Image 1 (cartoon, helix red, strand yellow):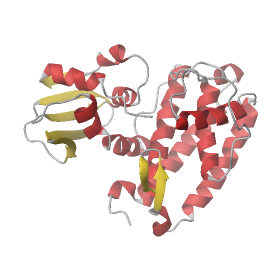
Image 2 (tube, rainbow, N blue to C red):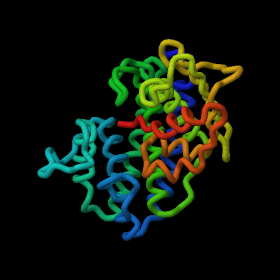
Image 3 (cartoon, rainbow, N blue to C red):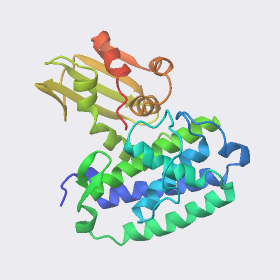
Length: 273
């Protein structure tokens, strides 16, 4: 059984169900034009983003897409996971907003029942995850992150302020933290001996520390980091999620210490598949 408190069933499910409610309210407020607005994700409108969210939840219920293959190559598909996602997008693209909302309500009811009934042993059982082999609890934390980030995508498409606080955001940040060693060490190529603090604010406070000692890893404390990046949570989520152009987001990033390394890290934060 996992000893990681960030994967505890109560913590993750509380955030998951809060995110379900947020998406339910968001979907219910969309008109016909809203569903077709382009999202920050290449090739996807709002309905496609919602279809992806719903399709993954249906997959977790053991269902398969009614579309078995895609007839044309699409430039925004880069891997097998992306191809599977596109099958669900294709399946639901002709549905009305009412059909989408009804499907979502059914998904939420069934998934809530399934996850609520799980024992701790079932919750932490070995499982495939989008990040590789892991546990079901890790997969569900990734799901909270994915759903919350896609909620932000939809809100960005609508020009509506994203919800950058609350339990879903905090669980999403728990998941993003697992990639910070990779971001700082592998992507940004921070040299050995580097010490980096990422401080998030506006409206919440979260701080992450990464030390490069042979390899980059998240650590609990850094008494005197050589580089500190400060930014709002929303900027951090969009940079790590690879959303949109990097340059406009960098305007919200403040670097103390080694400025060149700090900006190198900020420019190379995207790590999602």
